[in-house]
Length: 532
Image (cartoon, rainbow, N blue to C red; front, side):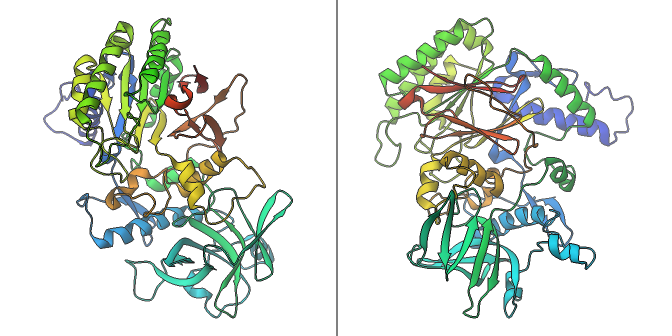
């Protein structure tokens, strides 16, 4: 309150809001022991402009389809939810995309009944209303497998039931698509079904993904699909207006003046750089030698990186129930701390963020994953006091930029779980299909829960909403890519970067396999793919 310069004994909303913002910033930066300055920012080393957000602390919001607004859920969020929580997971995902879809001019209901409206409108019909209807209809639903080998399309329409999702229309009836006859038709993959062809858009169509389909109800009770794709994206500004001031990212709500001030600071931060590495096997001497080479190189540069992001796995063997070398892994983390401590400039001026991988030690493999156990990292933290251990996924806010880090082998698992071969009309690159899938689904991991378990009450931690700004960007030379908002997907597949409707997603590659990593300069918004 002293920093707020309160001149009266009567306290109004503004100083309270200012103090709460200061406390939130102090909590986010608590691991770095930074102090607050008079302007509400963090003072200290170069890392003071970086806010690391643990996703377990991100507030949960739900959409009210009656009031057509978002509201913050203030109830308890136990790790082990009730059975109804699982149904709410699918319902919340569906409503999140549905409220975005109905604002799209192509899918909104025409205001006037004219020929032009019929020509340009693709109004979404509830699946329940298809019974007895003829002609082309557009529907939106979740692909579900409620019987072995039989895939259904579901939405929320059901008589007297709003808390669970019920079946109404069969989307695909086959034994793992054995009744489909796939053929190559130029560059477009099509599937023949009842002697008709349907087209699909870019992306992986998996169980649990939400799709928009155009088709016609047949006499057999089947919905014959003509076109199938993901819900279209929406401009970020429109989404923010609907959120009505809610903080979906978890970085706090800032005024327009504060955002302008941070944007100016961001432009001046020309020396800031993030270095991202994935798959650092501490039990492999060759990998540790290569990591020391990387640290030696950055120790000798004129301005050291402000942040190093180390993503798991941190061991070449899965830390599951059969793993019995935790004491050895603890000592290996201590050796990593000694290695970093041997570089005094990095130790004093850089911050080190550790994000667990899918096979690292933890209470379970369900997402989101909590930070690495303190037992493994406390010796490292003695050597590197400004080390930060966060969740997977993890969010970072650098001034105005929002960055999401996620370590999971998504590409391989999505390709295995894909129900229909992806379209090759726009691209044949699997990584680009992956980026399109998570972007349109507004979710980091839309895999079936039997493939990748998710903590039901914390599914909102994996949301990618609102959609980042849309900009036209171009690939630059020498492996550099200009970006605005960013998703970092740590995957064992090859190193890649891809831009998609303004959001740039890159995979730093596996450092232990290929010795690849990424350097990112937030001021110039430049991604540099690097390797030893």
